[in-house]
Amino acid sequence: MPLETKTDSFTRQSVLTAKLIPIVSLPSDRYGELRRRTNLYCGLFLLLAGAGLVFWMVVCVTLSRATQNLCQRIRERCCERIMQMDVAFFDRPESSPSALAGVLSKGIDDLAGMGGPVIGGIMTFMATIVGGIVVSVIIGWKLALVCTATIPIVVACGWLRLQVLASFEARSRQSGFRAAIYAGELVRSVRAVASLGMEIQAMALYDNFLIAQAMDSWRPILSASVLYAASQSVVYLYAALAFWFGGTLIAAGEYSDFQVYVCIISLVSGAQIAGSVFSFAPDMGKAAHSAQDIEKILKGNQAEHESTSEKAQVPGNGLPDSYAKCHIDFRKVSFRYPTRPTQHALEDFTIRVPAGRTLALVGQSGSGKSTCISLLARFYQQEQGLITIGGADIRDMDIRCYRSAIALVSQDAIIFSGSLRENIAVGLVDEVVDDARILDVCRQTNLMDFVDSLP
Image (cartoon, rainbow, N blue to C red; front, side, top):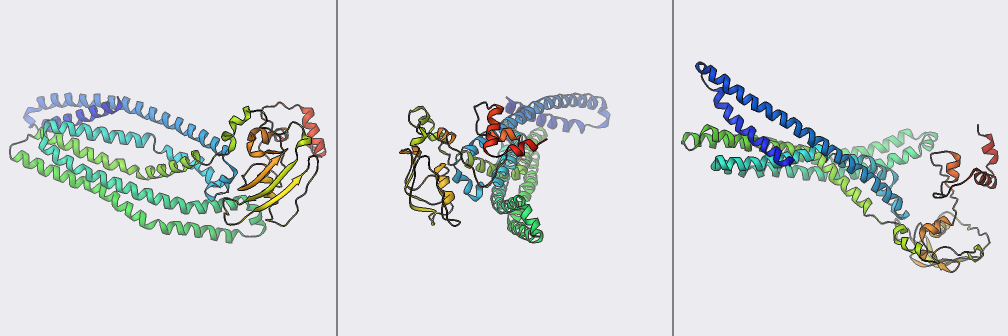
């Protein structure tokens, strides 16, 4: 086991160091013995170096590979869940495209920061402390108990620093979140900004976001720095106490130099490792909040894809077989957007569209025209009322079958990366489309002149 290997290596190192210190103190007239015993222990240290090289190579490769696989699985799961989310999920400010892209890129990279270095450091700390306490208690229990009693102070300072940095990271993310959303809006509207000459005003507002974020960070930075300094300096106070008590035991004739050296090297070095582990506290704080963001995505409100997946197996859960029966009815439909819960987008709305007829919804902006289409496409669910096609409630239909049978041309043109052919056939996932059908679609949509003009 890697943990046991590291414990055994550190234990032998402390014992060898305690054995070597009296040897190098031999007088010069015993040079032969000094050289022989020094060579022996140097050879043992070389063996420890070789074992440490092999051990840490295995640990680093294993942890790095595991972290890489973890990040790949998380990205796949998060992207899959985002594609399954209800449209209302994307109306929230924290679910903007910039925020979700940040979670998939920087957030998962921050989570990967908890991989190899941090986990390896935690394993080293646990193995060192446990092994050092066991060996020290066996060799010199009095000094071991005194030294062990001070280790929780070092760990507590590091833990408090981690909590302060985690709180600071949360506030920093909140401030940076507003700045990131604004920056995303600027990038998406860069043509409008440039055409109106708003570069200076836009940058001034963005600087205000950054200045507010910097002002909020002073107190957490100061608190974290004080706790970090305490966790580092208390180690030397701990060493001073250990040397003083060890010297007292030697002067009293209770302990030998070897016993004191083993206890001090094992436990004081362990305390130093404890302080170094919490130097990863910023990475731990970022990873903790990235994990929370990822958890919100993985446990977010999912769309109806899964909730209606079983309905696909039930006959009659699709659209009517004959388009002559596809009359559309809105019966006293009321709806409010989740981001505007106090304002009705539709209230007691009733309308009937007979099969084979064309209906135009005309009204001022905000009157509910797009809302009707969104409800009909099942991007949202109405709060009250009923929407039926051919007399069947659209909520009882399998959503995949339902959406595959309707077509929606939005006022916002969206072109995916790829060829013109791929964009025309983008909705036909499991169907092979021949060129004749593609050209027929181009003729129906008056695209043939444009297609013929292409090189």
